[in-house]
Amino acid sequence: MGSDLSDEELMANLMAGPRAQGAHEAFAILLARHMERVRAIGWRMLGSAEAADDLAQEVFLRVWRNPAAFDGGKGRFVHWLSRVAANACIDRLRRQQPGQMDDAMLERLGDPAPDPERQAIENERAARVRAAIAQLPERQRQAIALAHDLGHTNIEIAAIMEISVEAVESLLARGRRKLRQLLRRELAEMTGKGS
Amino acid sequence: MNGMKLERFRDLLDACGSDPRHWPPAERRAMLALAESSPEAAAMLREARALDELLEQGSIAPAGEGLGAAIMQAARAGTDEQDPPSSGGRKPPRAANDNRLPVWKAALPLAASLMIGVWLGLSGALDGLIGIQDDTGGILEIAMPLEMEYGEGDLP
Image (cartoon, rainbow over all chains, first blue to last red; front, side):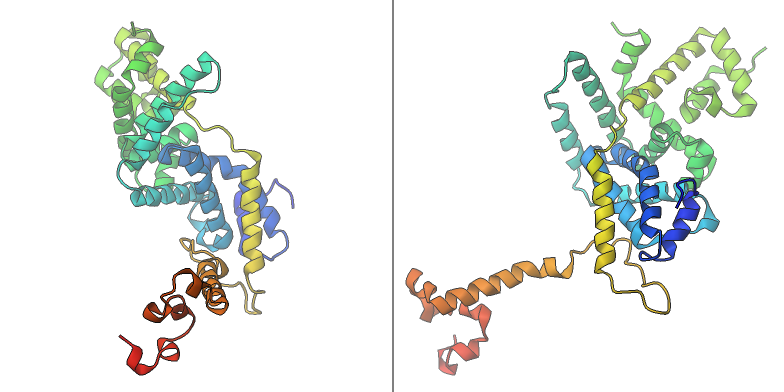
């Protein structure tokens, strides 16, 4: 099987059943193509690399066990996969105790950085960005992840989230405004407005 | 002259980000012109770019090599556990949210308790250790029904 097959063709292969010829290979190609995408969504929405890895495992095993859940007539695989990942994140967030993620983030903020000073500063800044994103409501966080981590256009995000483009713009606008407010110190440093 | 107001410029930056390729085509030219002619708009654009940059800095590092292999392994293990497909087609897929432990894993603690109970009962270890077998029934309750161990009048 060639890796030049489209995602949708590979999914058709999976739908023939897990024991069908080429099913494992098709799954391996999909995994290699899209695992980082799913992890990126998990990273933004759940706030830790460990949770992102767990999410990748959960989502891809869902794809493996139930490929028929994907309907090629309703859109591209990549959009469907992003939606499955984001919804799985929302499920996880709703199962979490209030404040659980924030505590985990604070813990990481306090972690000593193992690398040189510059790396430590960058790590700290990245941690502050993650902590700021964690304060956004779920849907805003999801839209930010799709736009910034996965580079989707607003039209694509609308397809993934199954909402209008205007609603996406509203989510992103509110999310970015809030982030500007939460990260004003970092932004001032970067734009030369800081002391 | 540019008819775009700063407020609209800011709203579009918030909604679409700092990359002009993502700006609405109908307003892109006006936005670029405003960013060139207005220091305030230029400052807003710089800040929007800085925010985009910050968000990119916080991206996740690539997964270790083991994750993909572990997922493949889990998928293979799942296939091996399944019965061969029926002649009518695919086996019904497992529900997407079905994260139950395999039956053998779920039953393991119960099986272990029973084994320990039987071993303690057979070896008489419980008598030696606590010496209150007649009052409590102890571990043997796990291994057999009460009426087999006690006479009817002994039951509380």
